Amino acid sequence: REGLNLWFTKARKPEWLAENVTNPFRHWDGMEGVPASSAKRAANLYKALRGTLVKLAAEPPADAMDRAREAVIAYTRPFNRMRFIETEEREDVYTALCTVLDDLPEGVLDREALLDTFEEIRDF
Image (cartoon, rainbow, N blue to C red; front, side):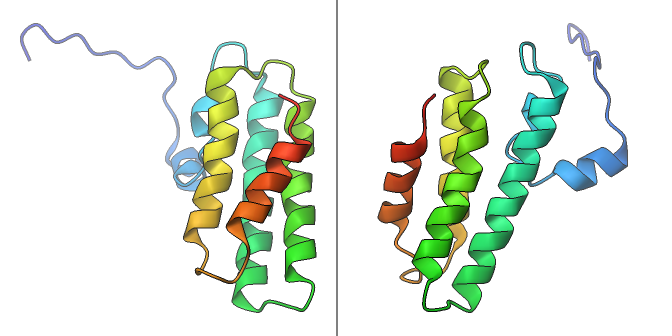
């Protein structure tokens, strides 16, 4: 179009898109100040958290909340060691957790208790 300037700086292969379409940290990949290893680590932490909580919500064992808390702790602690995290990245980490919790069936796991666990553990 006239007057429209468009350019691609970091084109991605279809495989990358397929793998990252639901990754809330996909924009960290290539983001200035974010190491590539941290972007990959964040995506893996999200996938692990989602997988664990979905499994716990589907067939909740007696200790489901304890295991869910452990999953939230395992998700949060590695972010504490990522020294580049500032306001935007902090919101990304929190929003990703909330998205997982919002996608779970209501009443199976205590959402507020898991968010409290996140707040207790988080140091960023």
